Length: 326
Image (cartoon, rainbow, N blue to C red):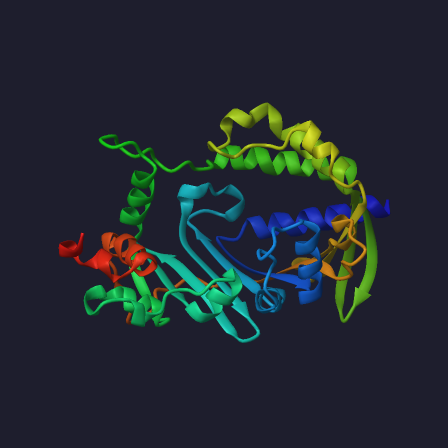
């Protein structure tokens, strides 16, 4: 009865979340630099390709904030129903990169110095660009810029197309297929996950959900395989052989409910790493009241050709801006 009651409460909380047209959440990697370096070492990187100390320190404190706005309730929405989106990656030292999709434009700004640390390689500075680089200087100076979203998508498709051919439309996940995925997830959870009430803490109700990782993933993908043809191209599912190599350690998620509303999910992933040096590795998702994405003021508009040509020039030298030098 406890499993049924706890599971039903979670199901109702997710149903209520799916009725919202705007949803905001924050992803937090609950770890430290030492753990990230231990994980990197276990992947056996080539000499000189190890994660830099600065990057590990930066990433260990990173958070990702996401907002989605749809014309329909989120639970009924396909990709084409979303009318606004915002995402921001931040660290304890400030915002790393942020972008918003509002109306016809995509808005972007970034801290290029911090990005260079995260990538383990320096990012070109505004000083590397010639005077006629225009809006690209704004990008490297951390100012807001905007690009026509449709032109950006067309340029992205054209880069992978054969000369003289029309670029293929971007693959999308329709609402019908999205609903199938949700139903597959619900069936798997109902059959494989053990729910328990963990009591109250600080006025909030806690429910834990525990399942063996390999079994849970295997059952989930078995549910999805019958409609693989409905998934977007490139969305390949892992094979049975690949899943057999996954650890079957129990993984527990702690769900926090406030007045029946889901406010936080915390998952401990340390056991999955199968590395004794990994002591702290978790994922936290915090829900908040949906905030409608807004267009930042004063953004400089960029031409997509300027973006593609300018960054190439910054990486290869100023000569790329000078046609006479070619």
